[in-house]
Image (cartoon, rainbow, N blue to C red):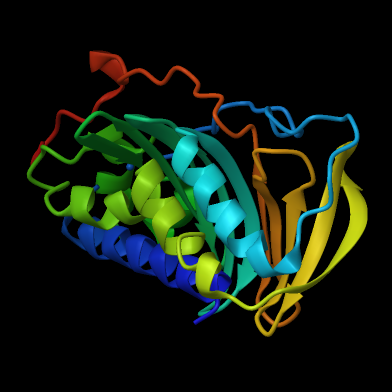
Length: 244
């Protein structure tokens, strides 16, 4: 299975879980962490070419050595999905948008939070009287209405789980080529497989910079091994109504 397809399934399942949770009652709209476009550890100096036969293994090993990444992507699989996620060793933040339904998300340690945006409130069919109580309030996974959210979120808000699912099996992919290119000014190599293309930092560590499938979409990976600070919402920003 294409890694893009798997990423789409993860995102679709998480959004579906949230919409279902919303039917029982839940909230809003959070901006993901700001991250620069260029990957952190890719050198701009000349580097030896990477053999296509070991490209997948090199990418997997680089991801294992890192502890953070910023992921952006647009995937057309099971609907139109946009991902913008900052994944850190023990925290994460970002937004998933599926077919126009926006789901802002946050993770701090083992606690997960989400806010219902206007579009999610509408998609979940939450009455206006309840929606106004939930809007712009974070809902934690430890709350009654947030029960089960942690398991749904772990698939895409845990650095290791996400990279294992989307990158971890590339070492068994047969690549060819190695066309020279640049990504945000960084020297890179583009390899081709039956699933699409993988653009990899030319210098070690060979971080994955872009994964593209003409039929499914593209995922961009940046700021490898540059964790950001994510903190829990203030008490005043957390939902405290019925089911909290």
